[in-house]
Length: 74
Image (tube, rainbow, N blue to C red; front, side, top):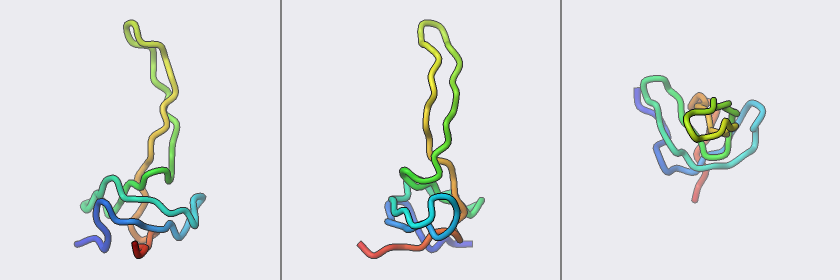
């Protein structure tokens, strides 16, 4: 199945906690029918200390289902 959006498209989130936010698609996952949008659906990941690096918390965008986004004209 083909997605109605692709990498680099500007989209608006239609549902969920980030409803109304507009962002650019960073990554498309067509087999899972999901997309990753810059600055939307951000999760915090705790990383353990490794060698000389200290432990830290990293924020990274998580995938959102393609049916919950709409393409926005540029």
